[in-house]
Image 1 (cartoon, one colour):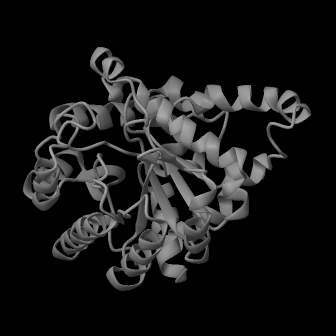
Image 2 (cartoon, helix red, strand yellow):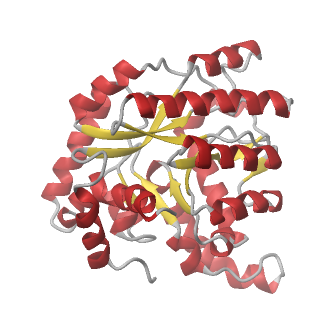
Length: 345
């Protein structure tokens, strides 16, 4: 696959290093903000357990304290699941607007410590495009968060093409996050919590849906961050490729432009990262597309601190991974966000 030239990327990173607002320390591309108003609306609609578990407590002071302890300079904040849509598109848009304004306020109050990834009021596509425009142009957010699905509207669906067309024009970075599948067997949710397995299936499903319709080929300026160590994609993509001839013969799928689709995908290491997991991810991507992620506050701070220390330890120890230490912890995120912001795109 033809990806970025590593040497050129290194030169770009060096040029922007001194000017970057958040120099030094790791950049965490996978953390969450859980505003009080958002929680109140979930309670109002009895939706606190829509994902099968209660959301953790979050406050900015505790988040910053953990970041200092773990030597995380900057965290990218995204809205947690579930999506605040309860059948009223106007209500959903209002809730999302308040969330986005809270997120950007936190970024302004703590310069260099937070970036913000705006939520959208899907499944209403028109309102989502309007909110994306407000978030990118007025609030000056750093990226856009998309759920794997909202009430059964899955990424890759044709009705989302106008949204991707807009995000493509804006050269947007998109951060994906799994949400409860729709429909879902609630007995299965009780037996095995979503976060333990189905979230990985959700992420894999959403990305393969987009690939099967060449969404990322048709909208190549959109860069997509895939969570949780790529979910099942290192296994799913080779299988998908192997079955393409049969699927095409039966006219179940068209031509897939693999290189262009995969070139737009980045991957965070939130969850069960390891040296072996990274090597497996490198079968479907390149080292400049791997990013550190914590999943704060869904995991206890002490566990997250131990996790990043373990990451640093094996990245230094393993000879084949050692050259990627700085790239994974900071450099790749800097290239994705800082380079984009400095270029004005």
